[in-house]
Image 1: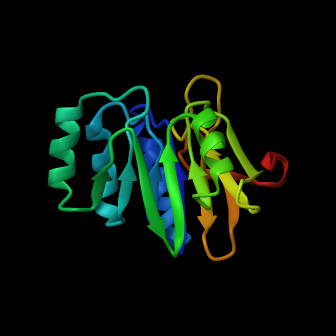
Image 2: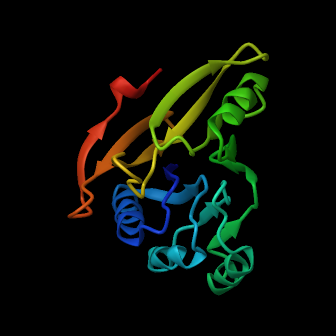
Length: 186
């Protein structure tokens, strides 16, 4: 199973849509949004893609009432989990939380194969040794909204091979301009 992991869209509809469309074209079967959607109406751009979307609120939660209305209008496509989410996809336990320090802490438990986070606006992919003698992945897609001077990025993940690819979008043309992977592995 392939998925799109993104975060910190901060109301940037064109970049959110571009990332999701690119991921779907590459075979993504679900989208994980690690928070800071801000205005829930932003998620409407994902409706035509007909992919399951799991979203949490982050530290810029916007309007929770409006989020409920968007979720209802999505007819089950968008699942709003509140401050964090525990999921199982392709046989892997995945935790979605906004803050990287919580993600690293959760990784050490060994309870999850992948912990997705956001907040820092900087993409990073890291394996963390856990208390169960294995390794857990901490995946931060950066900011798909290209907040401030940061590039607009998301992560395309293959859950079968455990390969993670950071993709960068051009902020003006809203197209993928580069794929970065090796230098972001910590």
